[in-house]
Structure formats: structure tokens, C-alpha cells
Amino acid sequence: MDALHVAAALQIQADELITTEKPTKPMHRVREIQIVSIDISFA
Image 1 (cartoon, rainbow, N blue to C red):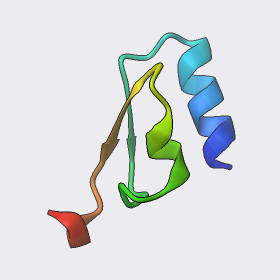
Image 2: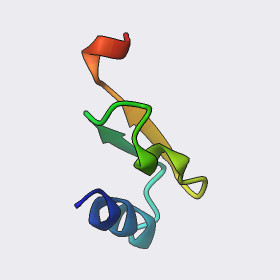
Image 3: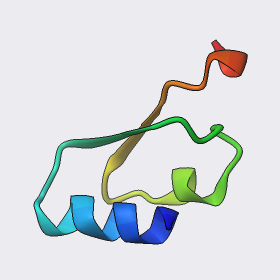
Image 4: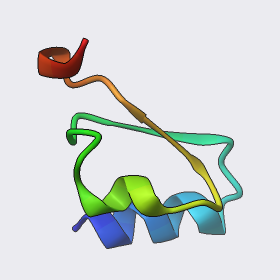
């Protein structure tokens, strides 16, 4: 599901993607868009 969210964000040329996924997850490896985590365990 993360890949679909990233693909959709890229398709609409979003500036950033905000997620609750932890920064250690693979979706944070994407370089084409800024991924912002709001996971409070890493705050």
C-alpha cells in the first residue's frame, strides 16, 4: 500500500507525502519526493 501512496503522490507532483510510517520503513528511501513522518515514537 505504501508504494501506491508514493506512486499517487508522484503522479500528482506533490511536494511532500505525510505518513505515520516510521522513518526506518522502506518508503523513506524514495528520493523523488520528500517523505514526512508524523510517527510520535520518533519525535
